[in-house]
Length: 228
Picture 1 (cartoon, rainbow, N blue to C red):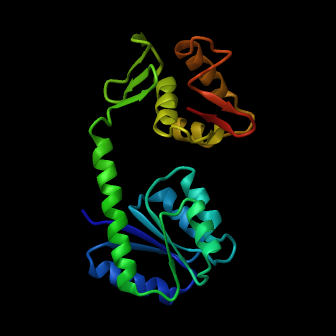
Picture 2: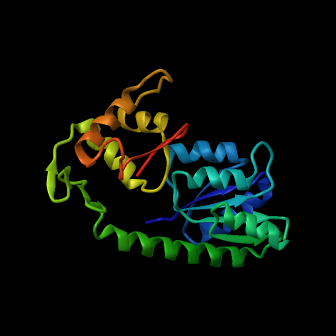
């Protein structure tokens, strides 16, 4: 299967140069001239790796990387005309997996891309073994049979309740906004006055928490959303 790489840089010549080298290695490339366009493309298509320039108009690569890391874990290689250590530290601290200073040797970039893709595939193969089961403490979720147990006892959830729980569990540790939860589960636009998600979270807690008023699984992050 072809690796899909998103190239994000406001310099067309650099994007085209990287694309040529990647495509010569059998990879599929998509280009974006700024971070806003990159985020839009990520909403429509999955990628295996992102090459992300730091210095861009509207939104820089650091901000874009942090936004991407809220929902996705594919490798990100940052490019920058700056070569100081502090810039590398900021790039890696924002969630990047690797950092390369401009001007760079295209062959070195290709080597780093291949290295990151190997690690990413190995990790996913290791986690695919038990993909149908998600276990968080005494909470067990079977995504194939849609069975949920807590402390070895079966829990009956409605389809929407299960979808919310699965979404949160697959994104363990990540805070998901009410808007993101609603649009992912109901597949329609969210209205700010809508309390549907909150009502469903309350029902789920009643079923899986020993003390719904002091939940240990689904945590509220005030003003932001919910996380497991």
